[in-house]
Length: 311
Image (cartoon, rainbow, N blue to C red; front, top):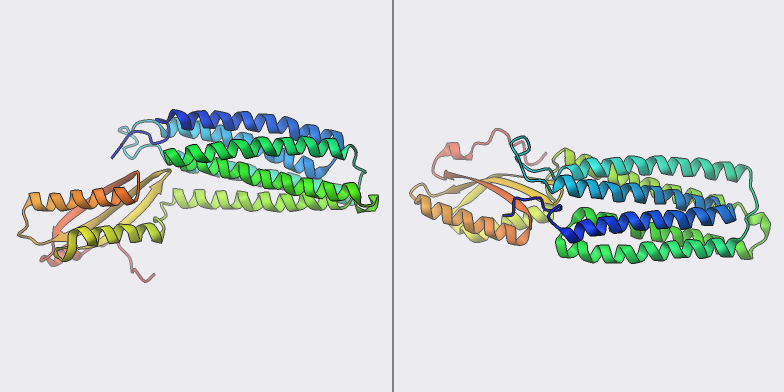
């Protein structure tokens, strides 16, 4: 298994992170210009989300640099968990942006103001959406080729921003053709954007907490592990005490493998190698630790760290 940094070693991933920074800066300029010419709090809310995009892109750059370091004496499992600190910080910023947007929208709802230059503002917003959409499409392709979860998350965040912009532009289109007393739609759209951003922030914080708490791998991935063990070891072996966790793109799996006590060390080693290869084929970037024990010894089945599987 490759024990070097799984993210920092990839030049294309790093270049995509810089592209994300450039996209965030350009769309911030377009969106704040659109807000300046129209006075729309819907566009202001969309522009404020661009701050989140910029911060997220900078987080990705930092995470790629740190996660790309080799494991060392102080960090024998590598530095991949930095992704969870990064996404947690991003989630906190998103929550703050959502609250700020909601506050601005409520103020405008209580004190409506007429909107101006809607066609120009919509044109600037549409240009920003095209930039984000194009960059996200390119980033997703690179993320899939290099199995970069953090880059994929950033790309999907940009796609979410695209749909937010589309929703705001649709609302502005309605306001352009309806009577002026419908101006309350603009702050309502902004409130909807705030709720959407709030949900994104809560999800990011939740996922960060799960990662830092060493939550087990998804049931589907554990099923892949169990299927591989049974397929390779066959009826000669049993296993228990299966534990797993994930740090960034890297998975960690360990379990006890019970083999016949008369089996040679070489035979047991070959079985373990085959199991590790099978798991790594199904789940990339996986570190596996197998503790071999004689299945005839009752003590081999003891594992005081494992709780009731029904709980």
